[in-house]
Image 1 (cartoon, rainbow, N blue to C red):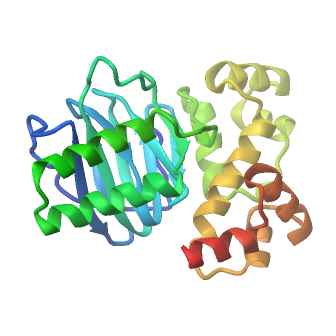
Image 2 (cartoon, rainbow, N blue to C red):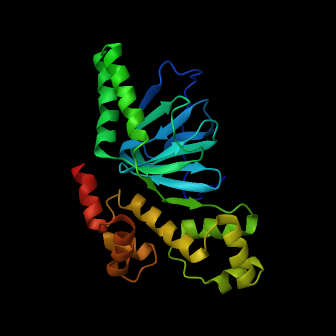
Length: 267
C-alpha cells in the first residue's frame, strides 16, 4: 500500500453496516482536512465521490485523486483507504451486486456527469424529506442507469511494489520538481538506468517519464483546490513557468488551470 510521508490523517470509524437495506445506499459525511478512513473492505461495491473538496483514494498499487468532476468505482471486497486532502463533502454510494449491474470488476475512475451529481444530491435531500419508497426506488434505478453510462477516465497513479522503486516514487511524490534523470536515480538505487527503466515498466506498466507526468497532473488537481497561485504550483511541480504547466494541464483535462479553478468555484 503506498503511503505519503507528507500527510498524517485523522482516521474515522468505518460504518458497521453488514447488509444493504436497498440497492443503492448513500453515505453522506463532511470530512475535515486530513480526515479519512483506514484501509478496509466492503461486502458491496462503492462509488467514491465528493460534491466538494478533494479526496485521495489508495487502492493496492495505485492512487486516485478525486475532485467533484470525477469518482472512482471500487468493486466488492477491494481493500482501499480514503482521505480528504483539504476537506470534502463526502457523498459515497454503496451499490449491491445485482446480476445485471454491468460495471467493471476492477477499480475504475469516471467522469461525473451533471445529471449523476444532481441525482446524488437529490438522494441525500430526499432522505431528509422522508420521501415514499416508490420515489426512492426511481432514484435508485436512475443512479444505476447513470453509473452504466459514465465515461471512464485514466487518472490513477500506479505504484511499484519493490522497496527500491517505492523509495524513488515516495521521494518524487514528496518533491515532484526533483529533476534527477533515470541515470541519476539508478546511481542512487544501485542499478543501471536500463535496469531501472525495465523494472519500473514491469511493476507499473508505464515509463518513469509518463509516471512523473501523471503524478504532476494529480498533484496539480489537488493543489488547485487550495488558494495557491498557478505560478507557485507550476514551479513546485518542476515547470519553468506557467506556459508549459498550462499546456500539460490543458492536454490532460481540456481546460487551463485557471479555467478549471473557475469551474470548481462556480460549481
